[in-house]
Length: 318
Image (cartoon, rainbow, N blue to C red):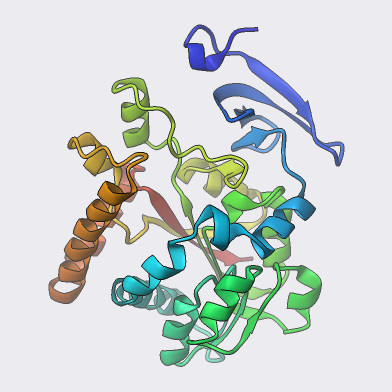
């Protein structure tokens, strides 16, 4: 058997998960004892072996923000003005595509709570599920209606159906994305809106960095990041679950790969990474302030080219 990281040969690998589901596909990368495969069963890239959901839940409920991302909440607070502009933009798009008067919104994985706060300030009836105690306590400064638990359909269904369900940077962390999306769909009103943001992995800019400039696949981060979606694979999964895709756009976060391609190698350099982040933040804040339509047109162009570190998909529940 040849090692993909030796650059000798690409092979297929088969894996049976503990629930008995068979996964098989071309090996893409290997990192820290995990293998990324282009899974023919699932229709998207993911690592094997797959962590068990109970272990993932325990990790995100406990040590995620304290050990894996110790500076996240502090830096998030420093960026609140920028995040608020981003989220205002998201809500404008939601409101253009959601005609309900009840304006009832659920966020799965509500994190620090700013997205919910922006929605509440715009007149939305908001509720969030957040497993991390650290993030939950942080979010209570901004919004009260947050449940300190992982999303589960039994608890969510007691809250009634929602006009909009939002899931930002969650699906890459779960053992079974298809089950997660089925559960989410079950609490959306017929014709309601689903709004998802997730990393756009193995995108064209990353492939240039990896294949031409010999960067290691820094975006591969097992076991926290289990699944690796792009525009094509997320749309295929949503369509398989009978969602109607409205529009894909890149996130309102500047494609950070441009800094790497410009010579600012922030990989494993947190200080430089933060400096690059501040630059893209200032760029976006100025465009939000002076010409938001121009910023949006740029990101729609990026979406057409399938570039951008993250993507947004708006879909309706049939």
